[in-house]
Image 1 (cartoon, rainbow, N blue to C red):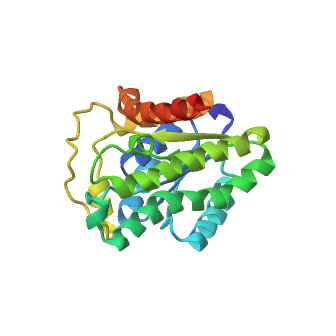
Image 2 (image 1 turned 120 degrees about the vertical axis):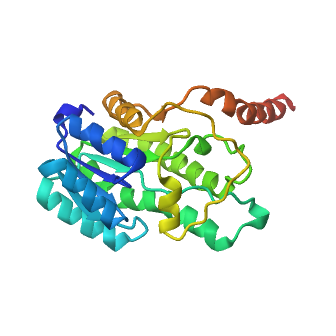
Length: 262
């Protein structure tokens, strides 16, 4: 979608981190932005700093009635949503499956996957009817390869976001609506602190986070460019393909084995 023709973006988890980087990228391109976030205090501060082109909506993405209220109020003030960014999420809990509290698993899936699906349920049909718009769903590199112990529940949710996005893209393309899945690597944000605020568990897991000079602003710019290009997948860091190769090689080997059998 040509962002010069877009008027209104709705960004969840938009009061901090990657979400705020995307918000600011939309503002730099002249869009009005509804920032939806569960953290009312931070949301009020961010909205107050950005003027009349921004409005806030306190939203827990697990709350489907809350989604409908937020949508109705946002579109009453700023008009139809052209860009939906389903970004809100929480961090991995650092536990292996055998040691995991089922409630922790449920929370991660509810926020990181079902919360994104709820955004699709709220906005996709209207975008399809209008024949315009773009949806960004935030997955993760962990939604492309599940190779790190202690990130399992998070990867389950993020693989789900990737699948949701790929299926939705096929469904929406004939109607002029784009869909991209954002698969960021590690970016220094306040994700861990936000996870604790919603009752989540944050523990150190076995991965050593690599140094990265990628910032939320960088990711916001990547998202804006991807919308203009109608890119299916957005990766933010180098060497993602190498991390996927063992998984893809195993799949290829299994397929080749089956194909070789008489």
